Image (cartoon, rainbow, N blue to C red; front, side, top):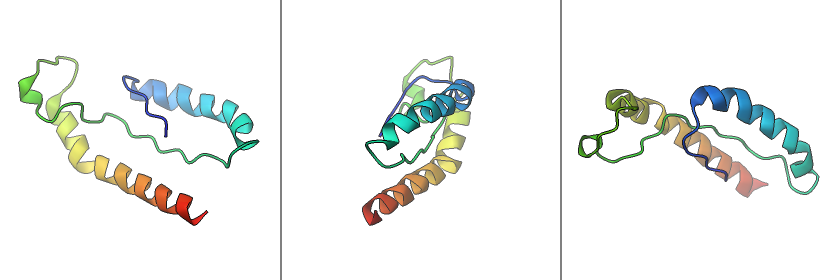
Length: 86
């Protein structure tokens, strides 16, 4: 698992897939092809009201946590099941 914090979604969409594509050949010569799961705009705090963070919209973060994050977790769960099978 590779976890990277503080990377914008735009940068992630443009740079990371390309970077992983370029290094994938080297990785797959030793290991199996990696499973990629990208989760963006994740929740940093359990209670945004306790912090002053002007760069985040807490309502947008909460909406993403409630709607998108469960889908990302399901993808990770399925990837884990696939890894165990293999």
